[in-house]
Length: 330
Image (cartoon, rainbow, N blue to C red; front, side, top):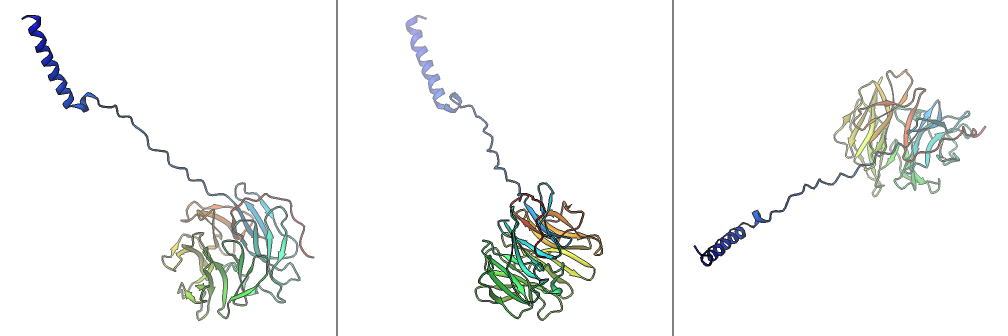
């Protein structure tokens, strides 16, 4: 065959091959797939250790949870009860008989100065003997913005500015103790035995002053109530003769959950942005109470004190320890 005849055949074959290649573009120009790993999840920062303010041998003490170091905050002949740390962790409320032997509500700076300031000035005890009970844990409470304080005297609920000014009655004549501001500031949780033989949980609506009963126990008393920081859960202890347990419920009073199994656990409070719960306990009610910290489920319990400790309250900011302060009063 001559070259002149081979050329057209070659061209025809080339055209056919190009047509076939064009009909399968994916085979002729397939891109190499490159595996791209998913982005790494954003790490969740650990809950801050913070500080506990609690009662040890009748006086206020402060523990740095990161180091375990304990710093005394009060001393002398006075007796202190039921501390409550402010939302920013800079101050704590507590009851003390440092002035004239009469129990009044006080406030202490948790910074370097540990300055103390008396907030109530009744002529008789504002914290009665019957309320000096760890099962009740009758602490005052801060509003979420730290601007208001709520407390109970003679069965009435009062509020005032955080500097002690502008006291105002919020609820009278309901045998109320242990008032607690809700995180949204619309409700005050409290305990009352009005019409009951035991203490139950109640809620005061601040807009219309109506009250709602949240629990209906008949053979257990409720003590030491507090809210989670989102207001969805209420933490408290249930107690009767020779036994006290720690529970959580939903804010409407439903879904009770018990997370302690020993005989004597009390004074619970949320800590470390609700990741933990602090409380005091002993194997028997005649033994020394010490402070524990646990997961919100009650697991991974760790004992924080070995020389006694009650009524823990968590402060979100770690405070530096300082030397023993000068005793207040006589």
